[in-house]
Length: 145
Image 1 (tube, rainbow, N blue to C red):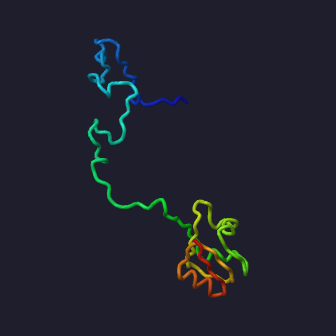
Image 2 (cartoon, rainbow, N blue to C red):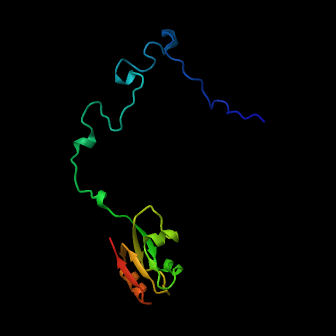
Image 3 (spheres, rainbow, N blue to C red):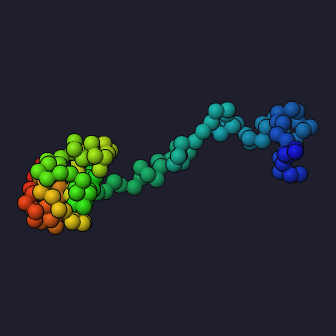
């Protein structure tokens, strides 16, 4: 079985710079001399021919505090049922049980589900409902940041 492209799907490469009789001799279809006629030319995004680019003409506004932002991994109370009574649940133990990954260093506990065991939880943030659910069977929630 021979596979080939349908007729008209491929074209031969245009051979340029082979005399004025070919129709694409001399400047090879690039126009007169200038920056864009040179080999290796590639324009930067937003380049406006030497004019001050739009991105630099418009004033900067606002405030960005991205450097100090803490991203949290979320874990629900129902996921903590895999621990035994009296266990201490912190970042390292959550990693061991594969309930979180190393992507973010901060953990937030949310109150979805039920908890039947008395455990001591050490997290960076916790919702009010989550604290309530953990403390109901006699456990504690410690918030460390």
